[in-house]
Length: 274
Length: 307
Image (cartoon, rainbow over all chains, first blue to last red):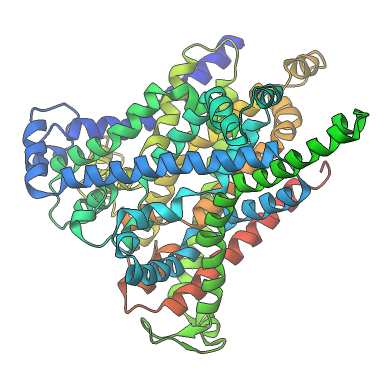
């Protein structure tokens, strides 16, 4: 009976895994084939990867898009974990009724759909453009600023801070550390795992984000990787091999980070519901 | 505070009070930046959108038009189509995905099962991809001369290729398949963590009482997992109501708006057609209303007896 049940479980899980993995496999295989072969539906790896890559570099802004995406994602991640961890720590360590009210109001922002913010934000950056062009429309700063602070990440850090041993803070105070000193010298090093999880989640979100960059970035030299792929994907005579190569390159950073930090990533996601 | 009360020396207490007041202020300093940012980039635009929804015109030449935009909303066939499409995605895709994720997580939670790590990673893998990248992959997989049609013909399941992306019915199915592929593993991880928190002894006791696996699932697993089911259902609902990247990149909203979502319509109204920011803002409040509506329903359904 148990064996039969196990057999059933294995069959279902193997099918589910195969369906999950197949598009990746197809993408990687297609990136090594010529466009004609991809349409034929081959599942065997070819030898055209370098050819596809060269074509990609020659006909698109791949390098620039990668650099733009990297600048935006890395800045967003650093700013996001700094601002949110300060706030999460502040809400939990210096707890008060008034702060709890503020916290609950911040949480409401999670219910606001981005589509509702898109137009006013665009107008806002239009106004900023006239005063400070460096952070206005069509700049990396305009992509970064609205996405850097999320209630989710503040919530995440507040939840993590609940596990933080608060007695050490008192010891640090006696040793003469300032409040900010306590945060940077004691809290940050202790909470490495939470920071790692938050960094992965934020980086992936930023690296893959599409709608806001689509709205706010206009010139080709400011394009990010998802915008580049979207443009390639909507062309009338697609070069499948080349596009798949672009997708492989775009997926690589998030996939690599995921495999290296898998444990932190899953722990971080789970930590967010507890 | 206890330390101050316990301390007999008033002088010491006075010395202590000042740093404490200071530390309360420092507490506010820690949260100020985040609060200001969220106020500036979430709540302020929300208010702006509300004001905007009573205006009309292009660019800077906007004027108040009262409720005109809201009246237009209910007569706008494209808007009604996008609401219908979005709700179809929601009521078909979210339940299928949640049940599938729950089912897979229960299978993966079996103690004696081998290769658990591999299965978990494999099924979670789609959540790592960018929405745009996987959308383009799905677009090609389901194109007329694409892999899926080729395979179905080779296996003699169909004789003519299916018009996946150009038939209003099949195009919706492709979108639903795509979102399910992307998010099932993501939700499964939450369920797995929840299942691991259920005390094994409850199942042991049920087994001794002779309860079948199915009964155990309905009477123990589901009730114990209620908070997590609610959490995943609400986040999936909010996600689906905001659906944009997939539809934009798989079907571009076509054929004839058959797959267009509300978010995409807002995008089109603002940046693709002749820009009408006022009406776009009005449409965007439709999503806000829908999110509140579905969230309340889900809280009501989930929170009847226990909470």
